[in-house]
Amino acid sequence: MRRSGVVLLLIAAVVTVLGAVPAAASTRSFSCVQTTSSRGSQRQAVTGTLDVNSAPHDVLVTRVQSGATEFGPVADPPLNNGGSFAYWHATYQLDGYDLGTTSAPPFGPRHGTFGVPQNPPGITGSTFRGFLYEEWLDGGNWQHRFDCTVS
Image (cartoon, rainbow, N blue to C red; front, side, top):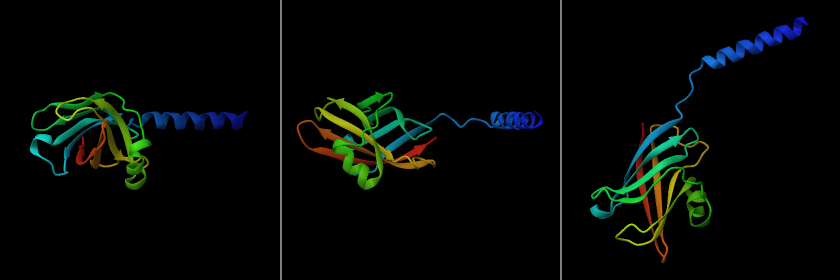
C-alpha cells in the first residue's frame, strides 16, 4: 500500500506541474509576398494561418495590384504531395496543400497548390519560403516563390 500511495502522489505532482505549463498558441498568422519576377498586375500575395503542425488554413491568394481573389479562402486545404506536386515535395522538401480549382480571370481554369516547408521540422521561426504552383487545366503552369512572415 505504501508504494502505491507514493506512486499516486508522484503522478498527481506530475499532472499538477504539466497542467501549470501554458499551452502553445494553436494558430499563427502568416503573410507572403511574391519574390518571383512577374508583371506588376500579376504579382500575388498569400495570407492565412498555420496550426501547430505547420499546416496552412484559411489560405487566400490575391493579386497585389487589384486585390482580386485568385484562390480561396480555403479553410482547411488537404495535404497533397502526389501528382503534379510530387516533384516539388521530393526535390525541395515542401508539403503541398491543395487550394482547389479556380476560373478567376484573366487566365482561365487552373488548379493551385501552396507549398510550405515539410513537417518535420515544419515552420519553426518567424519567416519561411512559400511556393505556389498553378497548373492550367488546358496545359502549362506557373511557379511562384514567396517570402513569408509569421506573426
